[in-house]
Amino acid sequence: MLDAAYYTQLGLRPVLEKVLAGQRLTPDEGLALFRCPDHVAVGALAHHARTRRHGQQAFYVVNRHVNYTNHCVNACRFCAFRREPGERGHFTLTHEEILARLCNDPPGGRVPDEVHIVGGCHPTLRLAWFEELLCRLRALRPTTVIKAFTCVEIAHFAALEDISTLEVLRRLQRAGLAMLPGGGAEIFAPGIRRQLCPHKIDADAWLRVAGEAHALGIPTNATMLFGHVESVEDRIDHLCRLREQQDKSGGFTCFIPLAFQTEHSALKLPEELSGPQRGLDQLRVIAVSRLMLDNIPHLKAYWVMLGVKQAQTALHWGADDLDGTIVEEKIGHMAGADSVQALSIADLESMIRLSGFEPVRRNASFTSFTAST
Image 1 (cartoon, rainbow, N blue to C red):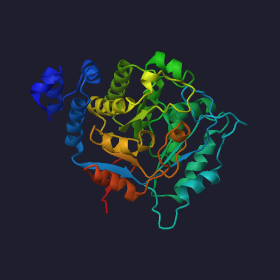
Image 2: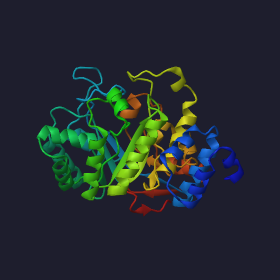
Image 3: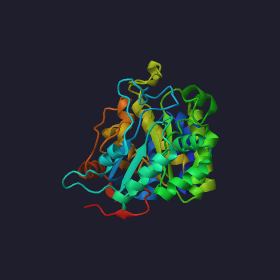
Image 4: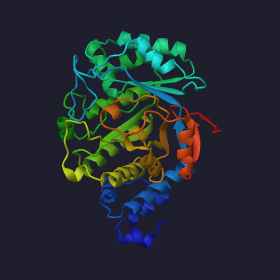
């Protein structure tokens, strides 16, 4: 499929040669990939890069999500999850409610390999509340990796306590935190960030917190929210800044491109950004991300926001991971995601096999794997 003459015709011959040699692409080459008229040609390059790394393996995890509150001080324009106190749908879970969601296994259910805990930046929940939660969870689930709190949440805790983000990370690590998810990155471009989430920490602060976590031995994921008002230049800038941080601190495990959910957001998009062409754009973002992020090992097709069918297709466009069983997810679904709330191990393995790949059950940090059965 990687015909040199055809890529020369597309103006991508230097990109093809670099991809085949495993060399780093420049920002201008990333822009050329976004502007290439042939979506499939870009996808084929990403599939080559993905297969060189992971062969026919495609990963999934037995996990559970819990969102502890949608009370948030940030009021981001794109967010359909946030609610004010007294507003319909507002919630803040107690420790008991959180632990029940994470530890109440159904008959014959498997203990999750990972729990994923994130929420809004609540104005009064103090760090000690979260430390106690993690300690209790670790006692109940000693073998489960606790992945919790975005870099934005870490910075919020630090501001509430008037301590450094590094001290917050150290305290949470002692309580049982093993990994950070990648949320809150949104788009790093300052102008877009001021439009979308002016009250969140900026790109420099987000990257600094991630680097601090990496220095403590806490791996993290990274995300990019795309498909709203950002340009392709903004996307490339975001990817390059993640790549630069990875060169410095080396702790990003997986990159997750998050497709913006338009249905219930206050941020309304023009028709040309919200029509059926979004599907091809999503695949191109996944492909270009795989090609630009040469130093981040894994790329997730997050089935909650992409949908099951698109996530399967994404495995051929550079993605190697589908996330997992999840059980309950609120942020994407409150924003309009129409995917199911949970998938079984059998569902995930069937999705992967029917896509032509070999399913591999993983843990949260991809450092150990359990053979599929």
